[in-house]
Image (cartoon, rainbow, N blue to C red; front, side):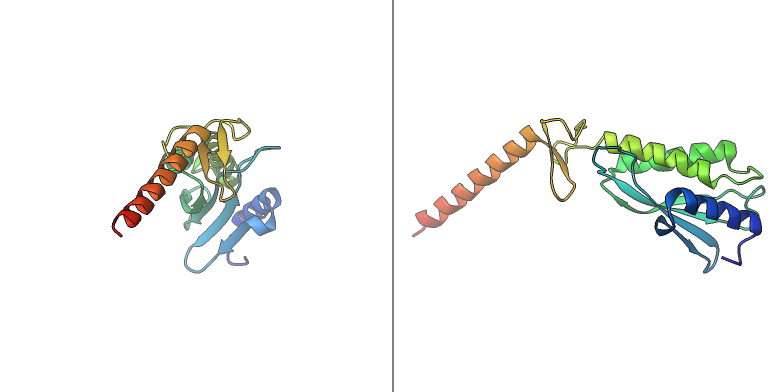
Length: 175
């Protein structure tokens, strides 16, 4: 990290102190890019979403240029959840992006809040409606981290069983 300006290097060290060394990666190939793996803050709950946020730090950052934000990878985020993360980052940068002391930590805090919200608003992958709390008995959280309404999953299972019976009946009738 010796190629980063001292102020940026200090800010990246602070990000590592907050999010952990294993969650932060710095790439200095062309521009300085800080990759941060974010998880929702769920306490005793279940993390259904996650995102790796890339912060490109152009020449002149901090003070003269704003970081550019994109989501490199995500898990469990819907299109609207992903848009919420990017919208939170954009809104924050419009008012704080040129701060002389840098803005990476508060920027990541804003994105983390949007990620927390996205975790709370997971959608049923069958009907695409909000599921609510994963601890609710009417919500099924599959081992693959997909979330379904119990009624939607029940109807889907009934449909698949019915289709299998019809397919078996069709095969036996043709003999």
